[in-house]
Length: 318
Image (cartoon, rainbow, N blue to C red; front, side, top):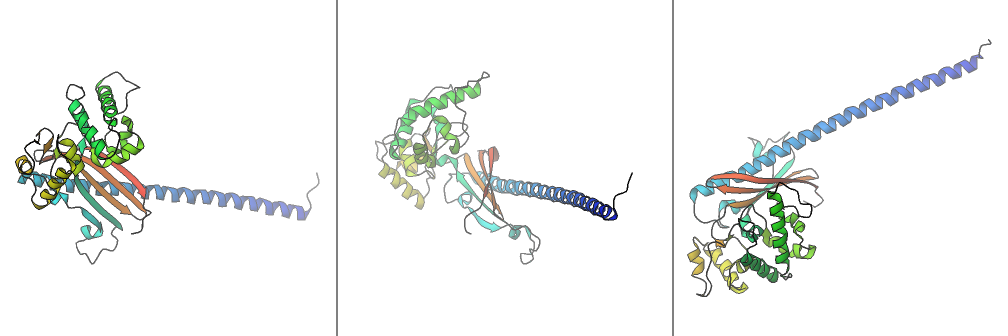
């Protein structure tokens, strides 16, 4: 068997060497990529855990404020500490003992706010404890629809859909035709509210776990007018203007500003609240992590009913 010429052997050796180098480079690149990916996953997981911890701290901050407010008692109004939002601030200003020495602190910005959930009309009022539709509350929702220039017939559709959703949530047997029970206003489309009606109603309605009155100290005039039989929008506006000077300590304070033909029903309106919405926002680079929570105040205890976390890309100029 004849041997290959020398120059052929040299070419084969060079080709083999090139193949080996290519394989080594490929394997090295794969290993570097795997290591980089593992580091990125670890960094993302660490950032997620840190963000969750910080937002949990924001919720604890809100619970502390509401707990202290409960200790003082009295009416709930927009002049209280819980109603003052936490403006966006660099997180390092909270964490650093020396505010001039923040090297190494996370470049993060935290903001938060507490809103009275009972400043909006509660759709849960439409259904009583026995699962029956409350016609008086359907008329209330119809008045609200009329005030925000939406078809009042929406009220009947929402009541029927909410009744089905509640019945299905309490039943062991599944009902595929029943809508899901919504937890917040972004899910109210499940009840058959069309997009335009939902856009108009969203600032004024929500769903809470149980029936609740409207807080006259925090509700907008449209909600106050809808929740009080015989009250027009102008009279509701007078109540809004009056509470800015002196918050209502009791229903009698508001009743004194109304005509004798309009009676405030304690089952529908009040001057205090037990449900609040807490929003926390954490900005890390171009990412914004927002958490929305519904909390209930039970005496001096404040418990979270649900928490919803959203992650978005911050495209706005800051």
